[in-house]
Image 1 (tube, one colour):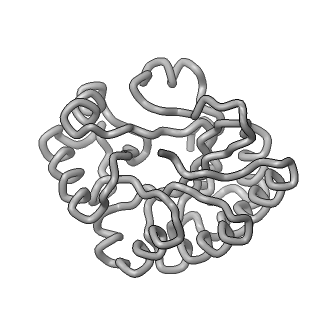
Image 2 (tube, helix red, strand yellow):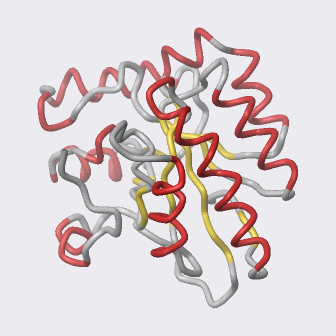
Image 3 (cartoon, one colour):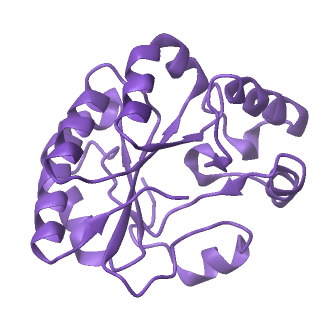
Length: 206
């Protein structure tokens, strides 16, 4: 399995219309969570965030919002931000444009947000341009990947991926999913604790 833990500058330049990090001179980290709401992982995350008065951004799948409306509402009630992550977790590279946009529109009926993140980080330049111009989405990528989806890693290694590469303004990605939860439940508390001890705060993306 190949992926970048720290997003290279060349990839950021290639998709320059996306937001990869937030320019700030303050000690702020932007935690994001993809693929929920999830019955077990999302409440765990919300509980951990509350311990540190941390805010985050949850990129939700439309069909999962339909399946877990109460958890979705709790995300909002806790003061976090949400974003559209398509309705069926579609890969933009493998999906016809019309189908891709219709799926995003379907998700938007359940997710009220001007933020969008493409599943797998994969979308064409045409899709990106259309989402920005016609849908008025801010397309949010990430600066640091925890790789909590990688079942060959330990939770401690996922935490190290984040703590070794995150700086002020970094957008960090975790996943609230069944596949990632075993590593997430170890990594997230470590990340929250270590950065809090260094004087960082955690904010949602606006």
